[in-house]
Image (cartoon, rainbow, N blue to C red; front, side):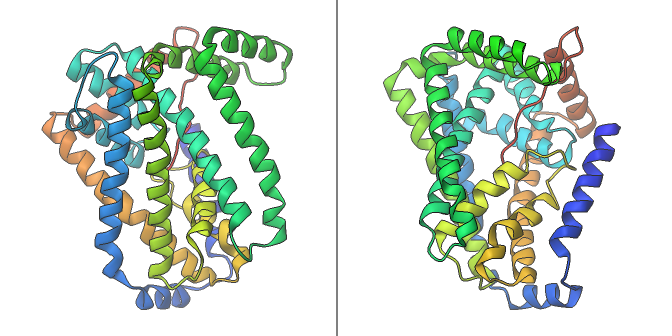
Length: 347
């Protein structure tokens, strides 16, 4: 209940910040001027995005069980539907439950592939954010000054992930020692990070294959490039004149923003992230707000409907889905009551 209240407060605060200084008439005019013929293209890009995501998940799972893209897609879409309508990012644990039940794969193994997904997502998103900040023409100097920091973070993230992939146990041991000195960090947080790293080690088998490693890397970057293109198309639909590189900045900021606790669907968070990313480009705030709604709904509605379809096909009712996701979360928390969650990325 506390998490729900905090999420509602954050969502309302972000939404108010996103609409501050504009009125309903301005937003209405933005929607009236928009070009909605781009919607089929938005849906096509969304299809490619999730096809790439399913392809990557299949490759991560291949050493454990050789599944097809069509076989992993139902569990994946049920999970993303869960993130859209269930609190606390329970969709991630829901897809672990569904795939494990469908193909008799240990839940810890499925979870490990989801953890690895997040690691590759973080690296890809940071890279695109850095490229967007550095190369976007006419970007404010305040933005460009962050590019060096972003580049350092990217390099560190890549090095950490590479070391984790090569010397898994040694890296986990190092983090355990570091956390022992950082006593100001919440114990639940440090325990969670170590548990996620340990779970991720279970799914490392796919990275021992050069073919799979290459496939996992290129699909990670390709899917977020597609997502960035979707953002650009949404902005273009509302006559917001920015380059695709600026859309990569929006992508990076939004992906970071949705990790903040909020209500399901990330409404309010995404709207504020769009404006924070674009306010230095001299664009209309009402147009940016409207474009963010267009982008979000073009993803939220089809993903939720497709997830509900697969959920119904698998005989999984919403009440049961939430209960099973909560059960998975409780199992992962363990008997010591440590809270578990996964960092979220938009889409």
